[in-house]
Every structure is written in C-alpha cells, then in structure tokens.
Image 1 (cartoon, helix red, strand yellow):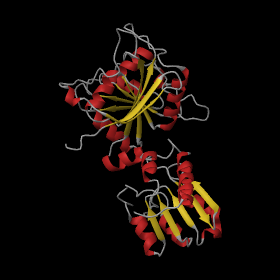
Image 2 (cartoon, rainbow, N blue to C red):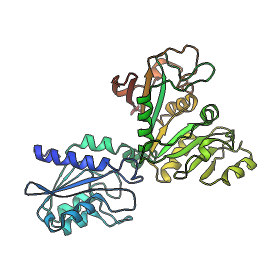
Image 3 (cartoon, rainbow, N blue to C red):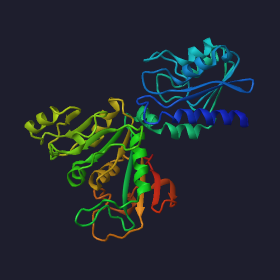
Image 4 (cartoon, rainbow, N blue to C red):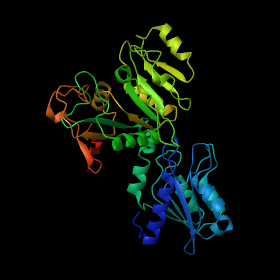
Length: 371
C-alpha cells in the first residue's frame, strides 16, 4: 500500500468520499460508497450507493461514463464487491468497462469481499492501488465496519447536561438544558443513525417523540428498553411516526396482556427476552444488526447509558455542556458503577468546540485490547 499518490488522486478521492456521504443514514446494512471515473484529466462519470438493494456506486458512475470509462482511472471509497448479493459484482463491471486503473481508499471488511474484489481486478490486468485517504474512509463507514467485524452496531451516546454534570433538576425538569443550535445538531444525528435508543425512564419522564425534525430527513427506528413494560399505551413513541417502527425490548416480567396490546398497534414490535427482569443489552444490539441496522444513537437515560458503557457497548460520546449550574440533579451516567479509578473508561480522539455557546465534546471510548 506504499503508493505515491498525486494531489490529483487525492482530489478525486475526496470527491468520492463526499459522494458516499450523501447517503449517510440510508445504506444499512451496506456501507456508504462513492465513485469517480476520470479520463484524460476530466471527470466522465460519478455516482454513489443510495440504499441497500439499489445499484452500487460503481454502477452509477459507469452508466454516466459510458464508453469513456475505457482506459480511465476509477476512484472508489471502498473496495469493489466481488460477489453476487442483491446486485451483481462491481469488480466484474469494471473489468467489462476496460478501465486501466482503480484507486481504492480501503479494503472491504466484509469476509465475502475482503481483498477478492481487488484480486479480481488485478487478475484482469487492471492496476489497483489501495490506501488513499484510508483513515477518512474508515471513519465514514465506522458503523459498517463495527457491524461487519463484531456483529454489533456502532453506538453513539448523546447527552446534554449542565457544567456541573446534571441532566435535569432535582424535580426532573430538563427542557431545555442545551441551546437551540445544539438541539438542531441532535436532529442531524437522528437523521444519520439507523436506530435511536432510550430507556423506559426517559419515556415516562419526558414522553419524547424521538423523531427527526429536519426538512427532508427521516425518522430512525425507535428502540425502548423496558424490562417490566412500564411504557404507557399513550406514549408518543408509539404513534408519532409512520415511517419507522417502534421496538420495545422487554423480559419475562412483562404482562402478556400488555404485550398483546402493544403489538396490536401499527408499527410496534415487542422483543421479549427470557431474562426475568433486566433486558440483555448485548443481545438486543446484536439483534439490531441482524435486522440490518448498523448504527445506534443512544439518548439516555443515565442508567441505561452507564450500563452500556460499563459493558463496553458504547463506541463514541457526544456531550453538550451548557454554561449553567443545576446542583442537585441526576447524572448522565448513573448506571456506571466503578470500584476504582483505574476502571474509568478513557476517551480518545477528543474534540472540543465552543462556537455555539454550549461546550460540544466528542470522542471515542478507548478499547482495552489486552482482554
């Protein structure tokens, strides 16, 4: 992978990544992929994967390029697929188009591909170079990579709290701690993630709709973790969206009549697990991935979030610290119980922004690779 890429190569790969990102939140269980075809210094075709089951990025770009794809260079943000899924192999399409060179940002972690697409191109005499803007490509598809390599979705915990670490007053008032700009960003996240996840306490206290209020956006699947099925039949999450199901994860402690009543409502699913009281969080997340959802936006509350972090199931945090002091009130991580400071989860790749007035802190949970 020690190729000497030119500034022109980087320019076109940046464009491929930009194209891929246009489908953010729309392609699961597939990755986001963008493709640019260049011949004699001119872009002759480009495209991106819109959603699962539709043509891949290379197919769109080849269709736009037509005969001009012959002897061209192709820039693609992910290794071209080599297997028959819902669509034919893209590697074969590039071979048929008689392209001269393919520049790939990263190898596909899918075991069905994983270098096979590159080998297919090379066997056909096409020059293949891999690794241009690989870090950027991996970050773009971090949810796909996590799901493909672990069977678990990528989980982001979003929380807004005061400067002294409280998500509400002692009386439970929480609207609004963060400012309008921060709340608008949250709807961008909802538009980008497959699933939004909360605990039953959040529903009981706030009765949120958990929808996306961006014009042209789409609502995520709503997942409520409710071990004893305390969720009221009148909760907004049960009726506020016709475009995304509401899933309630519960246990044997849930009354059968309550389950039947909820399941009779349009768009509502009840996932009952054999545990006596507490929902098995890792199992729920794996079941989400099995349904084809790669990313989860966790919006609380503190008990659920703390439990997930303690179990090593959260990948990233985005915290909004408002310049306010609340004093006595609940924490965003009440479920995280540490015996010693050495066990405290560490945050890496920390970013801090303050331009909106709130302090926006983001970072990744450091993984203990020694285990």
